[in-house]
Length: 136
Image 1 (cartoon, one colour):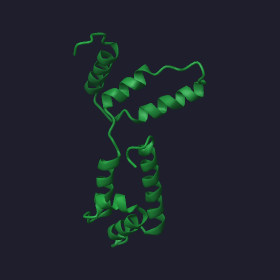
Image 2: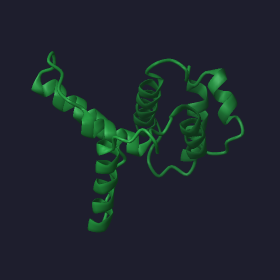
Image 3: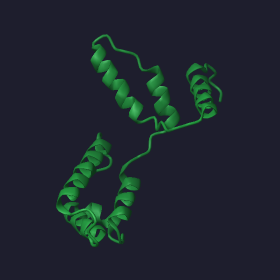
Image 4: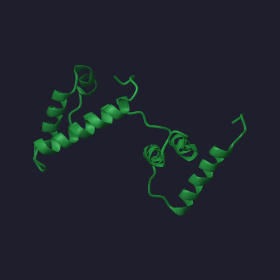
């Protein structure tokens, strides 16, 4: 259920587990690999989920459809703000704090950039983190 708390973690884990399963069941380079994957995928999902992919012709397109339905893309600026402003709580060890930062960092959509792009991102992030005006 995509309205349940933690559904994104569940869907992501399930899909990664299924991809690992597919790699073991269907030999790489098989000519019927895409259609075999789609058939297996259809077998392991519920009828409610199948409704979304019933018209898909390939496994890849089915995965893309379900990603668009179930996985909400986090706002990059909000994710970076959360990372930049996260502080260690008094009940949290340094290791727990570090792991929490690593999890937040995964949602920031970092990518290879030029120096100018990095500078612009830092300026934008500092602007958002440091602003005090209530009127935008």
